Length: 203
Picture 1 (cartoon, one colour):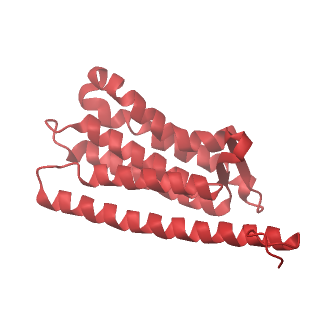
Picture 2: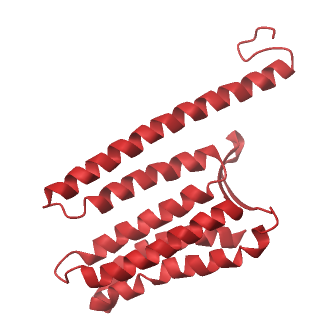
C-alpha cells in the first residue's frame, strides 16, 4: 500500500525540496529533477506483477472519518499502464528541458511546476474514489495552467494557458455534475431498498 502512495508523493516531494536544492546544484538542477519521475517509474514497475492477475492494491487515508470522507488511491493493471506512461514522458520532458531551457530562465520554477503536474497526473490515474479524482483534477488544472503559462512574456504561452484552464474547468463541471447525479441515484437506490425515497416518500 505504501508503494502506491510513493508513486504519487515522490514528484510532490521533489517540488517541495527544489528551492532548497537549487543553490547547491546550479546548472545540474535538471539532472536532479530526473530522480522523482525515475523513482516513480521503477516503483510502478514493481506493481506490475501484483496487478497482472486482476488484483488491485488500495491505499486509503482517512480525512474526515466521521463523515466517511477518505483520500484513496487504487492501482490496477490499467492505472499501472498510465502511471508508467506519465513517468516515462515526464523523464523525457525533464531530460529535454535540461538542454532546452536557457540558464538565465527561472529553471527552478519551471521544474517545480513540471513536478507538480506529474504528481497531479499520477494522482488522477490512481484515484480510488470520486472525491480524490475531483481534487486531483483541480490540481491538474492549476499546475497545467502554471506550466503552460511559464513564459509570461509570450502571448501564445498566455493564450495557451487560458485555453487549457478553460477546458479543464469545463471538464471539472461535467465531472461534478456526473458525480452529483451518481450520488443522487445511489442514495435513491438505498432509500428505495428500505421502502422510501430520499425525500421520504414511498417508492
